[in-house]
Length: 401
Image (cartoon, rainbow, N blue to C red; front, side, top):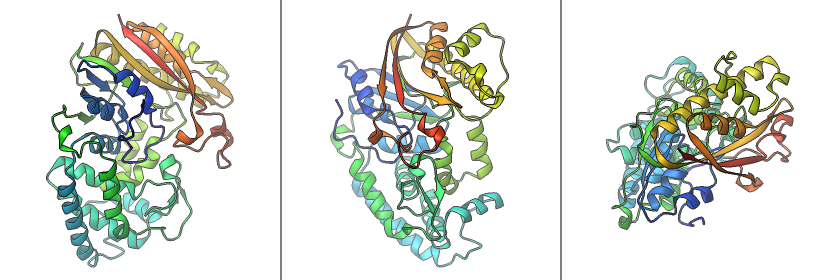
């Protein structure tokens, strides 16, 4: 059952269905829970809400920020006071800025050009000023909440501070010459939205275990072997969602250059980077389970092989950090690539079995149109490729033998 108190603090593409986490976290015994691809933090937030010890890891710095803000304690009075101080100081500072200086410090030329393309001058001045004072916050948790509120002004469907639409769908399109909103006008409103959705603002929750969320890689996790009682996660979708395409518009204001974000994106699981065919028999077997990839063009075939290779590393790590007899729940999206059906779930099941994870159950569920963060396949704005992707997902349940 979903709990009405838990509402996302920030838009995020392909968010895992909360009902899945609720179902598997409903235990009176305190569990040590991991989401190794934490995204916006659905698993860790629900786990903490139910009294479990929750860990999360993700390569996307924005995801780590959002998940941390959603799942940690929030003192409403402190946040409101800090937000008003930031806005007051930012308004004074912005008057000093020009078209040549309305960028964060140490911002290189490429990143400046990116900002000029996606943000009008007024918002560049205002976002530069707000970000300057967020950087000065010493308390990590308060700073994460402020960055989440800051990013909410950018990553929206249609009414934000950028010149784009559909950023929350991870498909930004530049459509405006002047942004619908100005940052100074909506910053406090964005902070209040985060406060209203934060589940741990009530001090009665403060005694629950704190979440531990880090920026890292699920292919090389920093946790001990045989450590977790339960793993719940949703791997990236092969070639269906470019998570960094949306995150980038916020990350550039948080101290990340365009080049740094490109490097992160190219190393992300599910990204469009090719790999050569491999000789390992279990990976060859998984490639056959995923579908008729020999029918794909070489480029897409390379993407698919790379996805299997990277997910092989993830499954090996999941098995390593799981306790014996513990469960792993994976929500996996299947899709169509160049008219070839790609069964990511079958490949992941095969990889998991190779590392001692016994398949207990798999359940297919259609993704409701109103729960998508991409346009639905039937949406008038969906391209022909998108119409055949993201129609269903498979919930896989393993037990470590």
